[in-house]
Image (cartoon, rainbow, N blue to C red; front, top):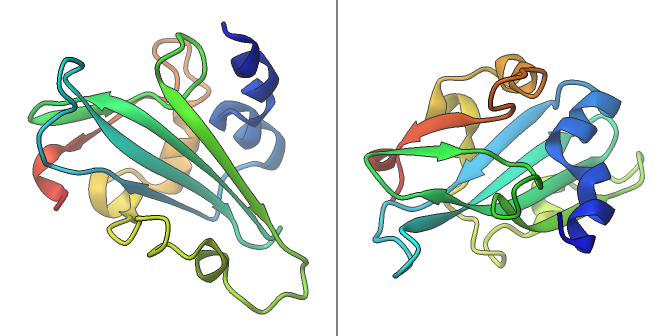
Length: 146
């Protein structure tokens, strides 16, 4: 693993879920457009919301382009997560986390709930990170994206 991956591994989805439990919600965004040339991958954003605790962790990465995308958000392997975003606010802050994220500015205006895109409940998503075989991997059809 690269040095940054070792440093960031404490923020990997499995580590966050292990420490804070099942997220209150999970959002995902990708695109159905053509893959990045020469890589045959398409980018994605994954957001784990912990609304009662007042924080959200966001990951960007790449999935192989095809009729069905396979997302494996983890730092192991060096190619799954490309960047990490953290946002926390005080418990008495009345602004929603998504308002603070300013999703339009970040280009995440097409983010949708994981349940809507994959059919996975948030609980089932969290359980994926406890698996031994391909931990944290899940699928979504390409045609659900704009």
